[in-house]
Length: 449
Ligand SMILES: *[C@@H]1O[C@H](CO)[C@@H](O)[C@H](O)[C@H]1NC(C)=O
Ligand SMILES: *[C@@H]1O[C@H](CO)[C@@H](O)[C@H](O)[C@H]1NC(C)=O
Ligand SMILES: *[C@@H]1O[C@H](CO)[C@@H](O)[C@H](O)[C@H]1NC(C)=O
Ligand SMILES: *[C@@H]1O[C@H](CO)[C@@H](O)[C@H](O)[C@H]1NC(C)=O
Ligand SMILES: *[C@@H]1O[C@H](CO)[C@@H](O)[C@H](O)[C@H]1NC(C)=O
Ligand SMILES: *[C@@H]1O[C@H](CO)[C@@H](O)[C@H](O)[C@H]1NC(C)=O
Ligand SMILES: *[C@@H]1O[C@H](CO)[C@@H](O)[C@H](O)[C@H]1NC(C)=O
Ligand SMILES: *[C@@H]1O[C@H](CO)[C@@H](O)[C@H](O)[C@H]1NC(C)=O
Ligand SMILES: *[C@@H]1O[C@H](CO)[C@@H](O)[C@H](O)[C@H]1NC(C)=O
Image (tube, rainbow, N blue to C red; front, side, top):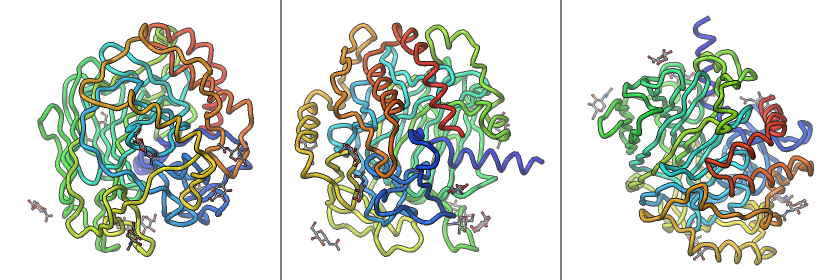
């Protein structure tokens, strides 16, 4: 019994949290994972949620193991050392991001909801929604990453701060909303189930207090710290697996991801719900006012370390997996000068669609001067937020899942929801959010099935 429960839990942690919303009817979706064949050339990229497509599917999280070919995935932008003070201005919808990591260092999934607030950016989880994931566009290999963050709260409500690679190496720090003084650490190697890698830390209430959570990740060791105090150290040499002859240690370029999600949604597996501290109570008053639960992100500071000393280099711009690699370990990665850009959301590493899309590139470049992240970036509040209603409809991405057809009503939902996100403030958000409950519920039921 206990093993079964743990198994279900671990599987969830390793895999289901990052599902992209399924915007298409079930029969159109082409799946990709270790038990299926790789993606077809017409939809060549395997997303981190195990579905084939173009565009977004070929960028952050594109899994080269199950894609049509290694080079279907767009090369991964190299690590950037900087400190980002979060406002919605520096976070682009993943449905608009075309790979320029100089323009945007952060994206949020199109189903998500981010808001400016005095004390930091909010990652919101409206009633019956999937929550929100914010991801770096660049990859860390290796580095020290510190996030100043306040978790959400409540049974079943999970806040997370992780490093996640395209071959699903993963470093986790997760906050269960019912045990707010015990953040949980974990790690995964290539998405493989691990029943025994979790360990709890101890601190003061993670919802009511700001803490700085640091992941110090080197080739040889991984240290989880809270407010400068190490809580757990993992040495690579402790992870050797004699059966495979490999170190089961996270070791490939990884994006930083910060999220809030309903681990305790009733549609999840029983083990997941138990791990998350029970069912989410969707009737708590916060879902009416302000209209959502949230995690708060103040800042992320990244100090990039050198890649492993033996790394093959033919440039400085992007990490790529080598074509002839065998085991998807750090030895499989090289550094190149290959570009990380696509021309539109039907592009892939096999055909970037750069020629057809001069409009898109220039409009993205023109925004760049005001969108650069820095320590000095000023935060906007609800009242200051820009009103950008409907003006950017034409480049909203219904085409991210290239192969499959996107039904127009659902893609309208994405566009509309995205534009709400860009103008809603923490104070004014509730009415807007609650008017989308029906649509959100629909989206969630599609996703979680
Ligand atoms: C792989 O995808 C298939 C759908 O084609 C699904 O039934 C199966 O559960 C998936 N396997 C894993 C390990 O995710
Ligand atoms: C991951 O687990 C699968 C079985 O579930 C196994 O075939 C594969 O070799 C494992 N990979 C590594 C690198 O341990
Ligand atoms: C961590 O804390 C949770 C919740 O209290 C508990 O269920 C779990 O067993 C703990 N994990 C470890 C590895 O001690
Ligand atoms: C792993 O390396 C650390 C640091 O070098 C050392 O203290 C530890 O004893 C080693 N552990 C094993 C299992 O070899
Ligand atoms: C070593 O890898 C094999 C193959 O993936 C797996 O079955 C086994 O559980 C791993 N051993 C440990 C101690 O994790
Ligand atoms: C190295 O990069 C150059 C130019 O970017 C390219 O022509 C060459 O094929 C690359 N070599 C390897 C081994 O990838
Ligand atoms: C990416 O954006 C930067 C800043 O806006 C711009 O200078 C650069 O030309 C863009 N790169 C590409 C390849 O479009
Ligand atoms: C992507 O391809 C689809 C199907 O060919 C087309 O309808 C859509 O307009 C294309 N999107 C873009 C951004 O080019
Ligand atoms: C997706 O990319 C592949 C490979 O570049 C291409 O053949 C296919 O036409 C693209 N799909 C769409 C809808 O453009």
